[in-house]
Amino acid sequence: MDLLQKIAKRVFRKQTAIFLFFLFLSANFWLMHSIGSNKEIIVVYRIDYINLPNNVIIANSSQKDITVSLRDNKTSFLHYLFVKQTPAITIDLKGINRNAKAGQKTYSIDNIVENTIKKDFGHRVEIINFNPKVLIVEYSTLSSKKVPVILKGEIKVRNQYIISDSIIPTPQEVTIYGSWEKIKAIDAVEITDLNNDSLDKTTEIYYTLRSNKNITFSPKGINIKVPVEKSTEKNITVEIACKNAPNGLDMKAFPQEVNIVLLVPLSKFNHITANDLTAYVDYEKRSSDNKCIVELTSKDSRLKIL
Image (tube, rainbow, N blue to C red; front, side, top):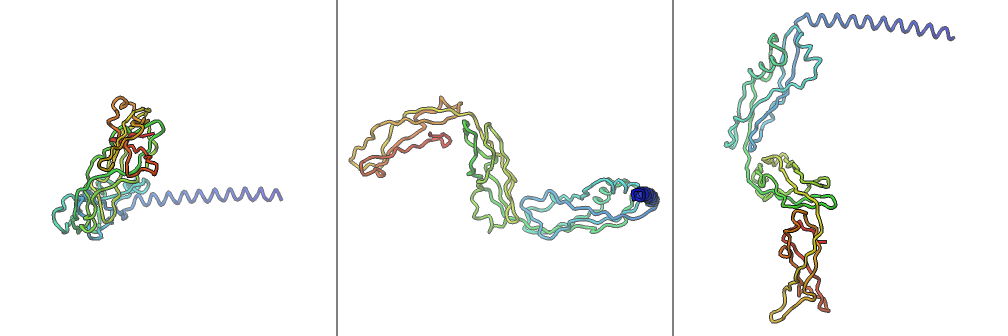
């Protein structure tokens, strides 16, 4: 039985080798025949539309690709067949009249197609045909308005660090585009979902504004610089003021001062004083035994009261 198995394996290996040899030989004959014969090849180019004005939208279902028929001796086609390419023909739309309510523009693409083919396949290639011959772009313009950018999202910092100064987005205003019905009620662009890792140094964050089919933005994103530095504690004594006392009533707090512990940036330790804080009691919020909770406010919202 073992002898039969060995004979079968040897025969199988021999037959496989013969089969692969003739397969390789026939493939070479086919390749040589293809290279030596003049045949057509079909190339499909994607169309990329660029420089569309911000206040313009393409109204028609614009052509997405161009089909080109070529003839060559296939020498240059081998490069095309074995190298991954993403062929694209670029149509520049900057000539569209952005001040017209609507219109259409016709683009003759003969030269663009010819130059692209020569670049990809060389000068020996012959263009037999391509379709479409022209591109017609129908467009309409959008309404626009400028609105401020407001940062409402939380920015996290690591323990023992603090945001040390104002966070100002750049730019502070953006232009929104869309139908007037869609944009008339928008008074500001609010950034509420600014996700970030806890920061331990000054960082610049780029936030991409989310356009959709109804509304677009210019610019498309906002730069946000977050000044961060190490923090330290500072004790400040502040006099307690009284609010909403009735006329003729002399209201005084006891004790008359409160000690406040703050978390402040190291660079501002010597610049923060009692004038930056307010402590007060509200007569209208007193309890039945004439006790009031001391309320604290800060001129700088970034200061953390411990």
